[in-house]
Each structure stands twice: as structure tokens, then as C-alpha cells.
Length: 239
Image (cartoon, rainbow, N blue to C red; front, side, top):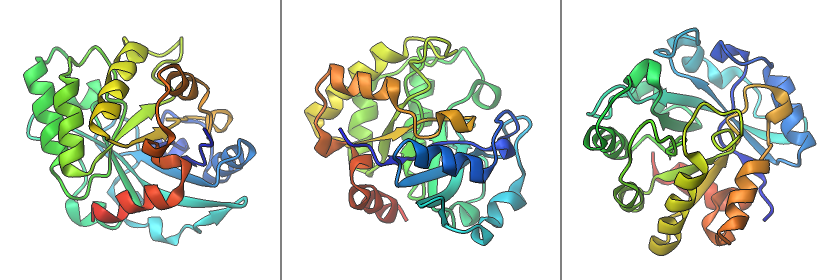
């Protein structure tokens, strides 16, 4: 499977990442990427950048080190209403918007109903393109509901390369991703691939994502990051 795009990565602007924009672009190019999305953590994540950072992304060149750059945000889903931590007027001007649940922003010890309410309400927002790392057993999931809602709302679900890493703090990721992919195949719901890289050595690295996709023989036609036209159709239809 020829993955050409990484739709989720971070630079040092996110606060707990370690490489610059140019270093991330060079790292992704080295691993054969043609497209890289830099999606800094939105403002409610401790230590990240503020609102003005996201409002000024238009000044950055969209071509670096021979690859096309997309600039956006990894929004924090804040509550069961699916509220996120950038204003809609700002999000609409981003190239790409990922929405994820993180413990520092959403909290821990939620019921499955609370978690699913947060995801479903976030996916109903027209300006969110991707649900990031919906694979952590610390947040109990109804994967059939997640996949069906993704289909209804034309939202991409992410295969996150960092989640099944042996040193990841997320729990049960490999098994959860296999469950999700089985349902995505059944309902013909496309997925995207995000490295979730926080350093240039991981930009465009899909070692673990590829293993999972290959383990379940997931159809390439449902992986939008194998063809930019497929990805771009999702980025455009959510605006």
C-alpha cells in the first residue's frame, strides 16, 4: 500500500514536540511522503500555542522540501456536546482539522455514552475533517456507532501510527483499530493515516499503521492517503 500523505503531525509549537516546520517537512519527504499536514495542538492543551498562531498560518509556504504542506490543528474535544477549542471562524480557514479526545482537556473516567456523545457531536460539525486516534481503551467506545456516524457525516477516522507503538500510553490500540477497520470495511467507510509525529524522525513513519492495515487486508480504496484526490475530496466536502 503506497501511503503518500501524513494527515497528523506536530512541531515544537505544540509545546511537547521537538522539531521545526522545515525539519518535519524534510523528515516526511525522506520517508516518501508527497503531502504532510502539521496539526498543532489547539489552545486548551497545556503548553501549546495560542489563537493567533492558527490565525496566521496563511503566511507559511505550502511547498517545502519537495512536498505539499497542509496547516491545521488538532482540536481538543472538550465535552459531551462535542465542543472544541478554536472558534469556527478560525477553523474554517485551516487546511485541515483533526478533532481528538485528550485526558488533560476532556478528563478521564467517562462512560461509553459520554464518550460517544462527544465524538458524535464533534463529527456533526461541518468543519471537522478527521477524528484523531479513536483507539484508546481508556475512553470506552461503541465502534459501530462511530463508524456509522463517520459515514453519515463524511468524517474520516484515523489510523494513528503512534497509538499501537509499544511505548504508547494509549491502551488496547491495536485490538481497537482492528475492530474499527473491520467495521469500516463492512460499511465502506474511508480512513486516513496520521503519524502523530512529535519529532522529525517519525514524520511520515507508518510502521505500525501499515502492519495493522496489512494484518486485516484492509482495501486500499478505503485509505484516502494513498491518493491525494481522495483525501482532498474529504477536505473540500467538509467546508
